[in-house]
Structure formats: C-alpha cells, structure tokens
Image 1 (cartoon, rainbow, N blue to C red):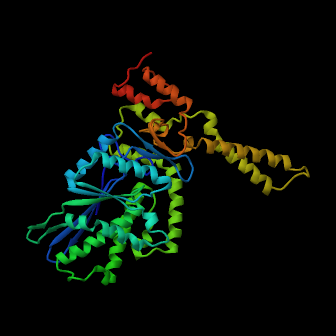
Image 2 (image 1 turned 120 degrees about the vertical axis):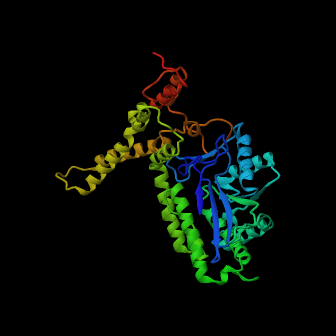
Image 3 (image 1 turned 135 degrees about the horizontal axis):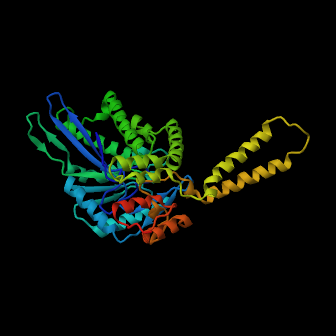
Length: 430
C-alpha cells in the first residue's frame, strides 16, 4: 500500500526537489502489511521522495534535459525542515541515494551530500549506492551489497507487530528513505529488495517460516510477491511520469532480461514525448485539484488560453510541417511538366532545416509548460549553482511583463499577473 503526498504533487520534470516548506516532489510512503489467519499483523514502512535540494531538470526538447542545481540561501533550512519532519513522523532515517557518481547526476549527488553533512542530524544516516555502476551488465543481484550495508540499521529499526488481541509486540523505530533521480525505477528495485528482506523476518515473527527458511524457497508465493511490487511500481510511475516503471522485469522475475530492456526503451521514448509535449495541462490539473493554485475570479482562467509567445515563435512548427508536406508532395504527386524540381526541393529543404534549427535553439519555448503556476524562476534561473548548459535568456515579452508587474501594471503578454491584482498583492494603476 502506498500513500502519495498531496504536497508538491505533480508531473515528473515540474516537481523536482524541495520547496521552502520542506516538502519534496513524488513523496510516497509504502507499507507492506502481512496478516495471518488468526488476524496477527505485521507491517514494514518505507519512504521515497525527490532529492531534498533546490534543483531541476529543465526540458528543452533534448532527450536529456539541462541539469540545474540552485544554491539558494534557504536550501539548508528547507532540508532541515524536511529531515526533522521525517524524524518526527517515522523515527530514525537511513537516507539511501542511488544516483550516479559521475556524469549528468554527479552535481546533484555532491550537493545533497554537502547539505546533509551541514545539517548533521544525529538520527539521520546517509548512504550512497551507485546503482548503475554496481549493477552494470544486468548484475542486479549485487543489490545485496547495499542490503548488507544497511542490515545493522534495518535490524535496529525493525517492523511493527500487533497480535490478534490488539497487543503491540514491536514498534518500527525508523524508516529507509530511498531516492534516485525520479524516485521510480531504481528506487522500485531497491525498495522491493528491502521489502523481501523484511518479509522473511515478518513471517518468522508470525511463525509462518521456521528459522533458516526463506520466502525464496516458496516459488508460487514469490511470483505473487514480485508481481505485487511490480504493479506497485507501475502505479507510482504512471502518476508521476505518465508511463509504467522501468526495470520491472527484474521485479517480476528476479532477473534482468533483454525483452525487459526493450520494453524499457519503449517506455523511455513515451516518457520523452509526454514530458516535453503533454505534461503542462497535467501539472495544471494537479495544481488545481490539490489546492496549490486557487482561482480568484473570471480572469484567472485567461492564462490557460493565452499564448504570450511572439507570432514568429508560434508559427515555426507550422512552417516546418508545411515545408515537409511540400517535400513529400514533390516526391509523390504526378508531375505535369518536365521542369526540373531541383530548385523546388532545395527551397523547401532549406525552409524545413531553418525552422528546425530555430526550434532546436529555442527548445524551451516549445515545451508544454504548466500555465497556472509558471516555472519561469526555475527555467531562467541565473543565480549561483550549477547548470549543465548555459541558462536560456528570458524572452523579451517576459522581461517587459515582469517590469510592468513590478510597477503595478498589466500587459497582454503576461495575463497571469491579473491574479496578483485580484489577490491584492499588486494594485491596478491606470
């Protein structure tokens, strides 16, 4: 059973990291409950959540978005709030970070480690496990290395046990908080391995398994167990990324397969399309239904229908599509004369190439961004920190609108500032 937090809820690339109140994206509490025929119960709780930093991956139509780590002065207080809340709710914390030590994910890993060391809470232990490095070449059995590292802390935290009569025999004294970049695929694999480790002890506590006996010796049961955790992974992944989880072939069968890797490739392609071209309205729905954005009057809906981009920016995809259509028409339609089509093809190929180059250079402008709670401060952030590519310059229409809003004026380029007037944070001036 998983319970997803309503705070900082949303789609994959729009709710990364932490906010000033200590809430993180894609936060889920997962509880594995075992009930016997005589109604004795045990439960084992784990948590997952986005890396508690101010960071983002900024979509720009490329397959790998721009990595951005923002070194804000409120980063340490926000992390402290988050960890103190976790300790108050669950007890001691074992933070398991599964991101890569090098490459695209290195900067966010190092920033997380620095901040955890700065906060230095005594009831919080940090562990890094480079999942892709340790389990490369489909050697996912090497997750046992991580389990061995965590075993003393897992034994100390234990699990919850209540008898049929209602007497509490054991309390769970802490949880493992796992994260990767999305808190989906690598996290799912590790959480299912931790759940199996705990399940052996839960069943022994209930008298279902004898000493030395393990659930792996009961294959029909393990099929059910693995599929339960794989379905659990798919449900969380669909809510956050729009597709089923990756790597579920290992969760379902206990081994990595080439067919599973092919299925992962298909899901990755679908994630790219949805996250770049379709997730904006989905994020708006999250913000509306969770109360993160509250309509304040008829003008609040204006931002949903108004596109502030200049005409030439909006026209580029249509021009490129028309150019491709003309090229295909020249190749397929019957010719009415012997006139050479060489210049015809050169012209339309140049048009298609030029428009594609423009779209690629201004990719941020063509991503489906949320409109109710815009992310301009993240997209165009130019403060201290790290960014894998140079941050795009805020378009002129945004700069003009921002200046007008500061003066208390409204512009047609920035209609969502109407909301500020209705809330009373800005005054309408003639």
